[in-house]
Amino acid sequence: MFRKFILNKKLLSLGMAVALIATGACVEEDEPILKDDELEADRWVTLVGAFMGDAPGDGNGGTNIYAISYEDAIDPEMEFDVFDDGEPVKSNRTARLQVSEDGGTLFNIAYGGENGGEYAKFDIRGGSNYVQEDVTVNISQYAGTSPRWSKLYDGDKTGIAVNVANIAANNATDPTADYQYYRGTATVLGLDMQETLISGYKSYELPLSTEEELAGHTIFRLDAPVLNQAGDKLLIGTWMRKYNPSTGERETEWDRLGSKTLVVDYPSLENPTLITSTQADGDCSGYRSNVNQLADDGYIYQATTRDSNGSHILRIGSNNEYDNTYALSLDDALGLTDTYVDAWKYVSNGIGYALIRHGEEDQGYVVRMDLNQKTASIVQGLPNDPDVRFNQFQGFLVSGDDLLLPISPLGQDGNIYVLHSQTNEVSIGAKIINKPGNHFIGVF
Image (cartoon, rainbow, N blue to C red; front, side):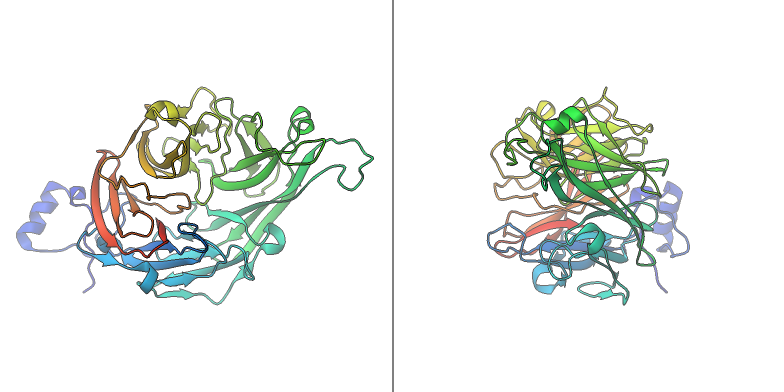
């Protein structure tokens, strides 16, 4: 008889716990007593590692994955070697992966190379056993060979890929014309993840204000799409860039604009508009993971990067506008300068965790944030090593109030850690074996 065991015994009522202990019984599959969003012990957890390319930690040598049970992932007596025992993922560089809510299906869009833009899904069967389904679809003709994308939390129905291409001045082909703007063509594409097909796409220019465009500002990249609570708007983060209107050269030092987010109707993907924060001026596109998170209070919380005053957490309300009365400055909350969020994840009840570096350091730290109180603190009980890196981190796994996170110094062995968000406690899970120059970039 197949049986499932309870992950968190605190979820049992006292009476049930006593009954189980007294009878030696276990809980059958058709008698679930897990609380909402609590993961089951036999759920597959995909551990992801990135190989070095030319330099340690660059992650450009490819990606390996390995599936373990949740029960084993949080067990400090277990150990796993994703680099020797895992399965490579098709991608020219670090793959951008997504996993179904039940942990049983992996989704991938190959990033760069001859298969760049190819979407495929895999049945997860444990260990290195990832079985690709026969049907694939290539979105490169719409969103390029290196698209940014995220899965919407709509029951694994939809993925959204985004791209900005062909940025140029309006007078690029006619130098006698007066300069007016730099613009690219933005594409927002919907993926039907169940039927493995493109469900729709839209392309459009994204003009800024006349004053901003005359100064050379433009939207360079889109990323981190998230669906609002009402399910009728997509919000997509932007990465800004500035060119010198006279020379056409890209500027590296410039007065930044307020953080901007693209809002489009969903599911039509039409009516693009831009909203602007007055509380921060960093980009809100993230890098390898989604920095726009829908919380249980209905707000979308957003982390900025490349901010002139360190990373901030901003929020967007149900009206799909920035709440410009709210901002959490990580510099101020942590007493640091030039804080940079590499990735972050909302957990529950106003608590989220950010993976940061700061100043001139590359060392990564884990920060617990109370978004309701607008406070933050560095989590204790984790490796404090100058070779800890989070710059390519992609995947967190949330189970109820807990967050799973793989951490190791570059090229060294480490562990999966369980962060208990409501108590700020840390538990050590399975040992993860590393190789020189390699690093871990997530669990899904």
